[in-house]
Amino acid sequence: MVAENSTPHLHSAVEPKQTFRRALDMAARAAMPSLFVMFSAILLSAPFGIPGQAQLQFGIAMCTVWFWAYSRPRSMPALAVFLCGLVVEIFSFGPPGTVLLSLLVIYGVAHHWRYGLSRLGFIAGWLIFSIFAALASFFQWALVCLHAVALLSPAPGLFQAALTIGIYPSLTALFVWGRRTFANPDQA
Amino acid sequence: MLSIHARQVLAKAVLPILILLAVGLVLLGLVRRPAVDGVRLMATDFMAPAYHGLVWPQERAKVWLTDLRGATDLAKENARLRDENRALRHWYDVAVALAAENGRLKKSLHWIPETVPQYVTGRVTRDDGGPYSRAVLLDVGSGHDVRIGDVALDAAGLLGRVTEVGPHTVRVLMINDDASRIPVTLGSSHGDAIMAGDDTASPRLIFYPQDHHPVEGERVETRGQSTMPAGLPVGTVHYSAPNRPVVVPDADLDRLDIVRVFDYGDDDSQAPDAPGRVRVKKLPQNPLTGPLPFSWLPNLPDMPGRGGQ
Image (cartoon, rainbow over all chains, first blue to last red):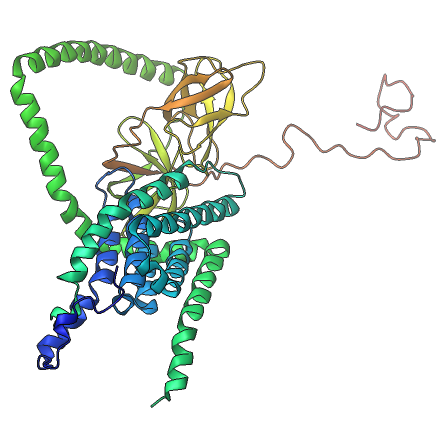
């Protein structure tokens, strides 16, 4: 995968004129990943009765932050990750702060290793993501146990980790397409 | 304007600062959880109309599907409903007879009528359990008088208790949540027990008398304690494994829609300070030495020890 500026043909000597409308379009395209996380978090907090809704909130946020942090960090700055995490925290009822902290840690890892991750194949990237998704779920489970002062069943945490790892390929396909088209600020 | 170096330092410091803030939120959640949940409740209050709008197409689709299923098999459905109606008529007659008998018995016993509890009815706004808890948010409208500890029931039985109260929304911790402990009474073995949620569909029964084990299929009702009234239907006993009695709840915990929250009031009936005891006057240390003071009474033998009543 290519880290940034995936559309070199657009970086010609002749740049489009910078108008207010173009700036707005670019900002909207750059904010697309963050808006996707926030919109998903709010949508999945509605009482649809879908099994695993809360776990899906966590999974979508983790996959999105991971992909965009190494793929195009300009579209997912640390402050945007923090805001996304806050929105997910507000619209979920898990132990406070765990999703936010997990998102920031996974962002830090992906951002720090972005050059290496971009060179790796999809499967290797997925495996590394799986380890961090499992660790984040374990951390959440440990905090819940600490809060309840009891050893709770780890099954919900395992399910959450499995769901997060499972939806990663399909979300990556969507994001790869989005990175070329609707979420590409260079095409504004 | 900041220098390039200063900007680089600032850019590197942003993530650690944000991580520190997140750690602060985790610690805040551990020590002051109600404060965080209060913010979440406010957000849900704000979003309640949007949730109704989001769920509306799903509800309509469910109604259409039900209608469609009914339309495809009208004759069979009619026959089933006729049978059910016949059975319900029988149970209606039984209920009327029992109500009349109950009334007569209460009258003959001079039964003091219990106070009618206040209640509000609300629609489930959202299931906010998350992976590790079982709870729902109810939209009870403004101006409600719901308090923490009030009892929530659906049409069939006990659902849980109110744990957080917002301006329009209340949070109900369900009976199968891991933090839920409800004192219950068993119908036929007459033992008391605690119903403990364990995040599964059927809460466990613990602390039951070892000489009166719960019986398979017997009714489970609430035991009166604090704001929890006695006799609310909870479910039936079922042994999921040997020596592991669980309660199969009457309430449909998975598909909640309309829920009533009852306020049974505080338990202000206080026991007397020393029940069954009468304060006894302390006897004088020295026995009486002289003649008794009431020796002037006729036919009273002059013996010590009769004066200290």
